[in-house]
Structure formats: C-alpha cells, structure tokens
Length: 148
Image 1 (cartoon, rainbow, N blue to C red):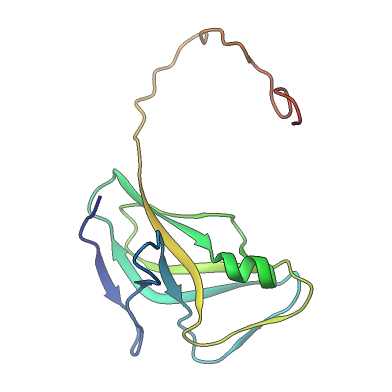
Image 2 (tube, helix red, strand yellow):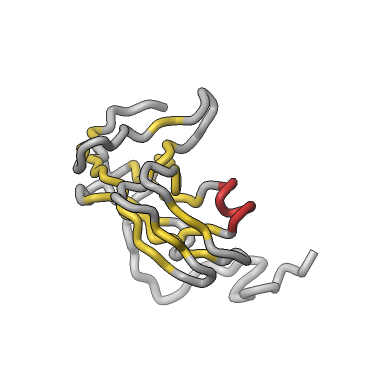
C-alpha cells in the first residue's frame, strides 16, 4: 500500500525523512537541533525533527517508534513507548526521548533519533450496551491465560 504524504520542512538544512533500505518499514526521523544534547541516565528530553506532515485520511496514522539500535545499544527509548501522529495533526513532530541505559548519550544535530511507520486505522462506531456476550476468558486480566 502506498500513499502521498505531504511534508513541510520547518528549518533550513533539514533532510526529508528517508527509508534506510528498500525493505524498511519506517522512515528515519532526524534531530533538528543546533547543538549537541547530552542525555544523562534517566533524563527525558524533547527533540524536534524540523518537519510537519499531513496524512491524507483518518484511516491512516503515523506511529513513532524507537530506533532498535539506539534502544538495544544505548537504552534510548521514546518516553511514551509509541507516539501517535493523528491524521489531523499538522504541527512539528517532536520525539520525547528517555535514556534508560547505563551511561550518558549524546544526540548530535542530524542524528537519526526515531522512526515513523504508517499503519491503517479502523475507526470504531460505539454502541452502548448493558451486557457483553460471554467469552471463554471473560474478565480474566493480567496473567489469566498463564505465564508460559
């Protein structure tokens, strides 16, 4: 599935997001910062990307994920786990990063800091009911299906 995505560059010298390989699912997002930012252990920092996008339909959303190399090697994650870019949001994409690693990490201007993946979104029509149909699991919550 392909679609046209409008991208607005918000600062001079910013590159369009890009797919690292032909098989990449996510577009790499880069740090739009003037100076390097030191992210100490347990720190949280908001890093702008210098871009805004316009998603053409509410049936698609952009999902911001951590880059696996940054997460596995340095403990750099998104503080909210996964960011969601709704189709009606046209402001700058900002990545809120957290260092859960064992040492400080430096983010330099232009570094790839996260990735955005576009996925289909199903919009629910809510129907209020007095009761839900019974299921095998019922109201069993965390761990109710076993630990293995």
